[in-house]
Each structure stands twice: as structure tokens, then as C-alpha cells.
Image 1 (cartoon, rainbow, N blue to C red):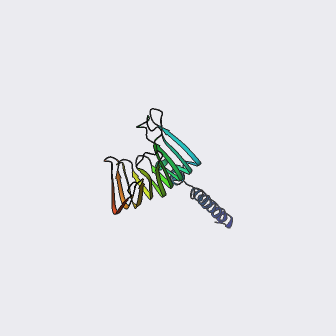
Image 2: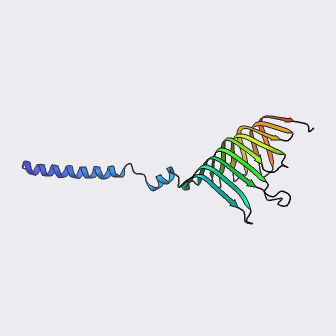
Image 3: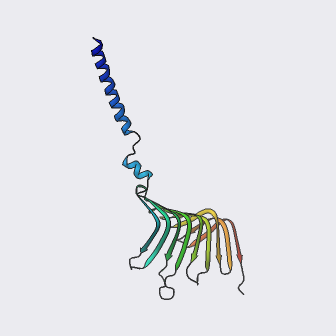
Length: 192
């Protein structure tokens, strides 16, 4: 075989190898559609506002957040610096618009599974006849299917004439029970 034929064969092999390497390197480093959906939010909003109404057309929830991200592949919503309002419509005649305000630094919800709030969680009623004036805790986990709110963190509940503190609590909304498991402490102030 002559030098020219050998050179042509080597050049052809090297060209094929270079083409294969180029083709392979073009595929690596690119994310698939599934990887993009898993890693990045489907929806992002700043200064987010939402209102949810019941079947009678009455406002049930209002939600405000500085930043909101929705991950469709995980049914996950994350929010920063949020304020929410829950409106109770049981006594529309005597207390219209009665409800509760919930404020937290961060929130996360996975549809039909759980919701959790972290950082400076404050709950306050927006009606004057509530026996509870304020609830403060650093973390709340709400198991949506079980309808149970719990946290290993401390909680402080203040009312007109009492203050209740403790840690590792569980609120069963099915049974309407509230249990503080660690370090319960209640102070009652007599009314004057």
C-alpha cells in the first residue's frame, strides 16, 4: 500500500472518529424535558395574589406572597413571605367576614399531601370575639389527608386572659383536639 492510500484511510478513520465524538458531545450536557420539568419551576411569580371561592361564590381564601414557584411535575408550590386569610362563613349574620390571618416567611404545599410553613409563623383572628388572640410558632406541618397539624417546635398561644406554651404539639382537626407533648406551661390571668 502506498503512503497516499494509507494517508487517505487514516484521514477517513479520523474524520469518522471526530464526527462520532462531536455527535456524542452534542448530546451530553443537554437536559431532557423530564429533567428540566423536575429541576426548574413551571411557573414563577413575584408579588403574587390569589383568591379562592367556595361553591356559593363566597371568598374562602386569600393568599399574598412576594415570590411563588410552581413545580408541575411534583405538584409543589413554594412561596416566600406569604400572608394568607381564611374566611369562616358559618355565622354570616352576626360575624360576616370572620376568619384567620396566617403569616410566615416561607411556605410549601404538595397538593393532596401536605402543607408546611416555616419561619415566624403567626396566626391571628380577624374578629374580636375569638378566645385566641395570637398563635406563634417557627414551624407548622399540615398533613392534608389526615387533617392533622403538628410540629416538634415550640408554640405560644395567647388569649385575653391566658398564655399557653409548649413544644411537640399535635392538632387533630377531625377530633377537635390540641395536645402539647413536651413542656406544657399555661398561665391564666384573672379578669379584672
